[in-house]
Structure formats: structure tokens, C-alpha cells
Length: 316
Image (tube, rainbow, N blue to C red; front, top):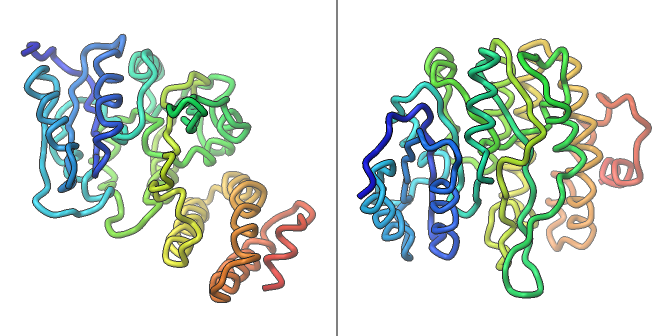
């Protein structure tokens, strides 16, 4: 067993039935150029070999700690389980079906230590299925680049409102003190739990940093089993829209109008069109009505001319 180093950052890695990918996540941690990390692997009562892979990692490397949930509790609860065990100055998150790039922790931790900010975030790319049966990383998408490039240190939402478009938990390193002093937790029982939490981090951080480096490769599973690939289900749509609206509400409550406006523009231009495509032929009319109500609420907040997708959805 590798003897553990004195860690500066804890990475929380939740996993449920991701044995096909979990070793890649674990290996991407072992490959980090920053070696002073520890990881809490939370097996959310998997029915496949995920838990065994986590146990093997801990047996081989003392920097890994494993927690097994006796019953499935969901992604947010798994992350909260790990959060309760963190003792390092910094905390990060990596889903067990994704993977870090080799310098991810080095870049994020060194940036936040240099700036003194509460939070640092980097860019990410999708891992999509390829013709060879594996996964290939794509380019940095425009909204990701808008949030993370160029590098900015000790910034705020007032100065950089486009950062509000980076709403994932796993592209960031943050000070544990931020979570403790603001009593931040992931909302249990909801899909798209990152949305509200991300805006809480931005609005409650004294300052944050952004770097253009790709720090995470985010997997779009070939079998479509990821929650982000199930938006045709009405309950998932409702959770998704609730999360989008909840994130904007956080920005409104914190009096961040430029960030709220940026978030509305991004939702209407990026999130809405794929949902309209699904809604057109959806067998349940409630799907269209739910989406239409959401769009009508947002349309009045946008200063841009309505797109065809916005006009179509608003009429439902």
C-alpha cells in the first residue's frame, strides 16, 4: 500500500453502478501531478462491481477512503456523505464515470492559493462515444469558454457574470471554510443538484478564480443512462426546470442582476432548443405545457429578440 501524503485537497467521488468507468476515474486521480490529495470514494449501494473497484483502490493506495451506503440515497446524499468527512483546506468533486486531466488539481489548487479566493473553476469537455467503441474528448464548448477564459483571479459575478454558466460541481476546487461558514449542502432528492449549489458558491464566495485549462472530461454514456440524457421524462424535465429557476432565484436574491441576465440568455439559447425538439413529438401534452410555462416566465426577462424556439415554446 502507498503511504498517504499530507493532503491539501479532498476529492469526493460518488458512484452508483459505474463499474465500467470507475477505474478510469480512480486512475485519473493517481495520475495527478499534484500528489498531496486524498479521495473519499462513496459507493451509493451499487449492484455491480463499483464498490469492489473502490475497495481495491483503497487497498492499493492509502490516499483513498471508501464509504459504502447500505441503501441507495442518490448523488447529492453521496456527495454530502463525503463532505462531512473532509478535513483538508480544499474540497473538490469528481463523478465516478468522469475523469480528471493530469494537471487538474495542480492548476486549481495553485491558483486558489495564489489568489486567496474561496473558489477556483476550470473548463471541461464532453467524452462522447466513438466508432471504435470507446470515448473521445470533444472541444471546449462556447459557454464553457465564456465562463473560464481568459484566466481571472479574485473576480466576482459583478465583474464576470458569465461565470454563472459553469454550473457543474466537478470543475471546481473550493475552500472547505466556504462550505462550513455558509452551511452549504447538496439538495437531496433532486436531479440537477449542481445548478442551485453553483450559484450559491458564486454569490457567497468573497471572490473566485477562473482558468481556461480543461480540468475534467465529462462522460456522455453510450447507453444513455446518465441523468443528463433522460430529459424526455416529464419528472426529469420538472427537476431540470426547477433547478434552472432555482439558480436564477439565488442570483436574484443576492442582487446579481448581470449574472441573472447572463444565465437567462444562456438558458434560452442553449438549454431550451433541445427541449423544444423533444416536446414537439412528446406523447404527453403536459410536457409541452410545463416547458411553455417555464419559457413564458423567462421570456419577459430577456432583452434579446425571441428566437423561434422561444416563440414556439411560449405558445404551448
